[in-house]
Image (tube, rainbow, N blue to C red; front, side):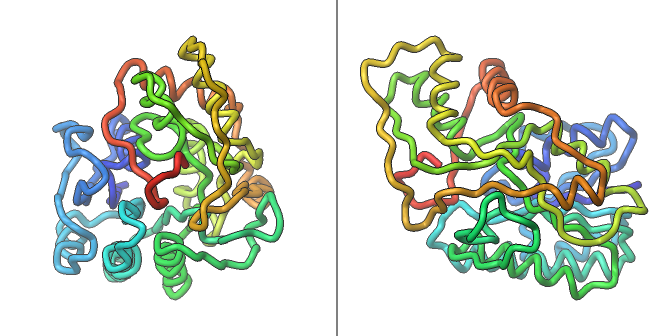
Length: 311
């Protein structure tokens, strides 16, 4: 097995590198390091790193033709600036088309796509079933959904994993790193009145084992615990973990226009079809993340939302 990972220096991609390399699997990473850092990827045998954008068709085709991957994991995504529609389109749509076409041309055995839960927009039911209508309303959600739609036009095996908030080493987006970093610096925080589902990295890596099997059917799967938790719950866990005594009641603000009040994915179809089920509890997921920050710290924190939100 030879695996090409786009966005391989990001949180999900770098954890996949750490999973595959010890098993003797050759990995090639393509990353432009817009929301990741080169230094998280070690200089070791079996790992090839190419700096560049998947929007560059020649670069993508050259990587495929020289590395000759058997499997592709498409983790790259643009989300850094909610108002930069052009960059979102170049990476999430054009870049995805480049990856799909190169996968087809090189007879890749399976292409795995990581999709945002924002593809569902503002859902009419929660937890959100996998057959819920797609109605994204942000640049990130729209462009990622467009990229996903092109998968269905291919004749190779593919899976789109619609992901809960995956929590693990090098997580740099969302309320967990935000609260940890600000509270450690004795800065004030606020919580949006939103509800989300959270998935431990260990459970995420276990679903990868399932979809990489030859017998795994093509199609779309929700990857989640199916449990929703408020941002305030996360805040309270971080405060308790850090042993902080606050002299204020944290403010809970309404969800912004570019956000969704509740996003919780229903994993029933995934559990039934693939025999997979998340095992790590919500509290343990958050604590394990905080313990990692204790050891390794936090640098940059990103968001796919407009400025002023903790989520």
